[in-house]
Length: 189
Ligand SMILES: C[S@@+](CC[C@H](N)C(=O)[O-])C[C@H]1O[C@@H](n2cnc3c(N)ncnc32)[C@H](O)[C@@H]1O
Ligand code: SF4
Image (cartoon, rainbow, N blue to C red; front, side, top):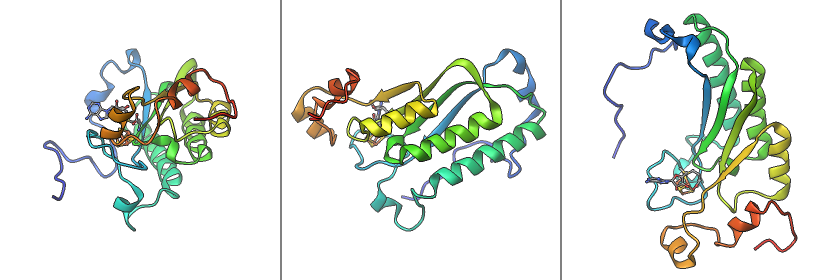
């Protein structure tokens, strides 16, 4: 079924925000959410806006996504400035999905670097990416840490193999404690 736009005013093409966003702006924190709408497999229970490579067809490309997201950051910077919002550093950054870690860690690092380069980041700010337990490697996690990610949120769902199967999960239960221990042993389950 074709999707329909939600009720309400359409988003303005120039991104200019309504004047009421300026009310109390100095007392509000500024957080960034980056949506990465790709998954290896669609879990049957999931309501999030996300697509497998087959569902994407030729209409969009995971390869181009980081550059597209960076263009959106640049658009947001211009739109916020034109709307009169004061320049403030980010207080939190969250990459969610979908499965952000389906993209190469270098791509996530590029998007983060662009956002922090434009807006800055508060000292000690939490920078998270969601991940599936089988969508990371010791190398990719190291790269994410080096780029400034301070937290990884792993989706586990269950510790029972047949429940994971019913939920269409692609990882084993043992994969989760393996990462939670933070150990990069060769015996990856
Ligand atoms: C949208 S997923 C993104 C991260 C990762 N792909 C994963 O599967 O964990 C984040 C979390 O949302 C939760 N979730 C997914 N579908 C949901 C639903 N229909 N209702 C409530 N929570 C849901 C799952 O627990 C999942 O771990
Ligand atoms: S991997 Fe995560 S985002 Fe993707 S379909 Fe499953 S629960 Fe949803």
